[in-house]
Length: 386
Image (cartoon, rainbow, N blue to C red):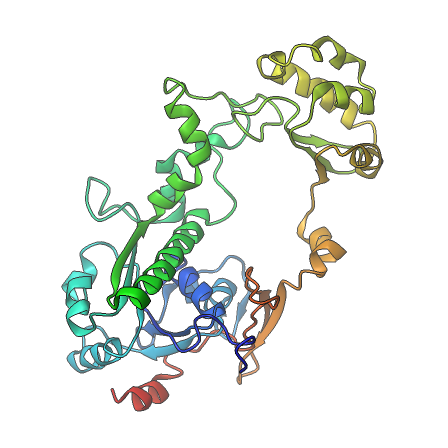
């Protein structure tokens, strides 16, 4: 490949000893940036997310989530209870650049593959650990699972309307954000290695990633006498933001309205009921629920397109609320070229997302689907002399 077409991580070897979502999401991003990712899997069973079904759809015997998050990787079957296999794995570690693991704290140490042990094998390796809640403390042995991390983090308490109760995200947001944080740390450690010649131990957790996600609202809370915010009773979209910030039902769908001066909105939507609040910006928060109810009553009288025709030319921050069919059918999404089809020799073909990162104007795409368990074992063992 030419210098302009090569990927930033071309030539790097990543050992992925993680499973489920957080670690594999981290190594997926490294793979998209050019790294070679060798996934270590138990013979016969493999990564448990192979059977983590989000629906009744499976492709080639594995779940769609496994395919989505492990595309383009290689699979080396290793029995971690077998001495010969562990010796082979240590041989691979000696030649690798990065190792990622998300075992529950204490497990990797019992396997003899802690950072300290791995550093003895390869002082230049960048080693990343992802846990549920860190390596110490009363939660350390609790299951590091996404929904449970959301529950402990306070995040789901922010969602939904006041009185509705906690509302979890409809995504494994803790796993994905922890994987992204680990990836950032790995990239920084690789830069350090290039400068200073030694590796590093990158550590993060689901709870730390979700805490960081809330930096905006937590900082406000910490500097506001630790006074908990109150969610709006209706159309709540941000506990700290005043009306009209929220999502409103229209005659045929939903309309999101972000930060907007109330007088301008009242004029454009011709809502006389808002006039009493236009000259008192403090009321946009203190009377937030009343104002939102007034806007709701007006919004439902017209279609989303009719409202957009009025609001968008006036530079009001607003948007239709898209479902996935609407998103994928819109030119604004299609021009991003964010989808790809990956395939495998056994007739596996799956449409999935592509990397969100573009390098020199090009979005990296990997044509190969996720591997079968141990699919590349013989090739890897021969190549690395294991």
